[in-house]
Image (cartoon, rainbow, N blue to C red; front, side, top):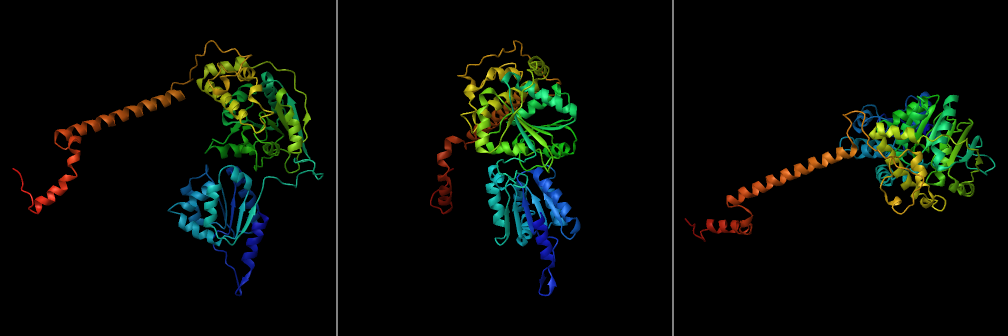
Length: 480
């Protein structure tokens, strides 16, 4: 940010033909592209602080989920922006829109600085095509900055660790049967101390189900959740958690990089990340700006080799923290939760399926092997009523799981329809519409046949125009 503002200041003060260069309102001189809305918002907030002393420069934040593309286009047209902070999807949308594209494409011809923040993540998230098209609209003569996720400023000076020296890294080994109970125990302790905690889970479905579980068992008023499938409300939840002094945020790796959340006391990795690099990024959500923080990863007894792997691969040393006494299982309470609300039954089933599928795709398959997963204990701990049908369970020998004999579940309100019933009704409606169109088409064909223009005379149609021409030229006689 400092480099951009200094460059623009210098531009405004540089004499050109004995005159000061005019900073035009509608010209875009700098663009900062960020992979996520949360990170883009934080960049814009920091930029505002730098621009307090330079009111001649304007900036605009263009991201999805806050305002529509049409609103962003209108704001850019009315107020202009010398510096644009954007996510690649929204910027690409604005540049190619018929209403605003030509005007914005003309504005970025004055571009002098382009910054791709978290450039490696931009590519990981699949923005390569959008970035290529964005670059095609920008002038080739410009300054381009590629910023990566790692910062050496907070890394220990010895170079022996890739995590901040003020961060304490722990791991805890607990059985699959007691893993959820251990998490609830830790969150209750931190809630009593008024701490701010982030819990990382492997999938969106896990986040949705565990949010319900934590709200019920921890009884903490400030329990929020964020995952990648959230669209419009994701930023509001993120902003709310940033302003909270204490609470719990359950999230996926969408919150692992780039975001700056003040005063996070503890980061819990309930599920180890799919990549070793993501482990470091998750830990980096705490112990920021010189503050102390702690990170804890929960491991099964079969996963302890992950500690040595992190030491070799990421130069991260973890200290073992003794697990608390085995807490009482919450299976009965969780099953009652699902029996009372069919939506919770759906969430639990999707969470289990997505967890097993994500585990099977882990990059460290020698350590995280689905064959060694105690699927029965995991299903029991999550309170599943029955095991779902999935390929991973066809050949697996599942033990330590007793299915619920009565699985009659219901929704709390009549207005809430079952997801599969809703889709079934929709399919039935589409089938009826298709059948009706077919009947109308057949009826139309029948009428055409009766009138002499039906399918039985299709072969004659090409010859009719030729016969008509011959008739007009008098080459054939009209029959009566």
